[in-house]
Image (cartoon, rainbow, N blue to C red; front, side, top):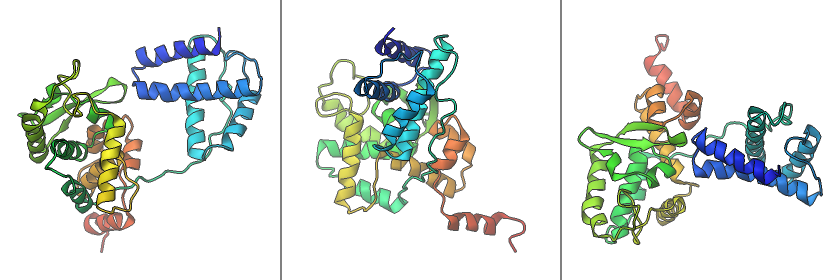
Length: 299
């Protein structure tokens, strides 16, 4: 079997057995394709079943000249997953990356926005346009519910349970969770839904999708990035922000206002609480204040 045949089978495994999203599958596949390109460029003819640690080391050495340690670690992780799949399917007995060390990247704390900065972003939206009402509703939803951008663009009208005060979110690996939604966010969604969305000519297949572009199609992830970057420029916000920044801010503001880590983990849909710990971008002053206010030995 060729590399492409193994890769095709691997993609089916990721989709069917692991329930991963197309974006994640594409990223994993890209790592394997990168290795294939290296082998082709260097005229190394070897199958995925036979490739050994030495060849992988050569590949990593070449990659290390092109990308930063964080990207290297991600590529290694993707390749490890591919070779673990080959072991799982009895094509190989060992993983050639088993003894290869991942570059130390440290924990990168994400940027967060203050409540004032988020208010300023939303206030900068031009509400005189049809897109304005939609953009206000989607930013409020992104920050109000702490959603991933992929969860936001695929949000369905049938997922809105406003009477109960929840939205149903389908997250990574098709895992579903219920997230509370505040009255203000509900109000802006209703305004968009009842005054703008209902006048659109909706394309087949998107009748239940909440946020649509002017042509009646689902919004792309890139479009959400563009909306947020443009608003940041408009208010001269000198921070490198993305849709994920609003998710980080959601978690941080909850924690700073007394929510416990476990509740935040459930709302964000994190499998591991360790991930939640990285998300909550706490400054040292806040932690000192917590000790001062709540510890019995504070005096």
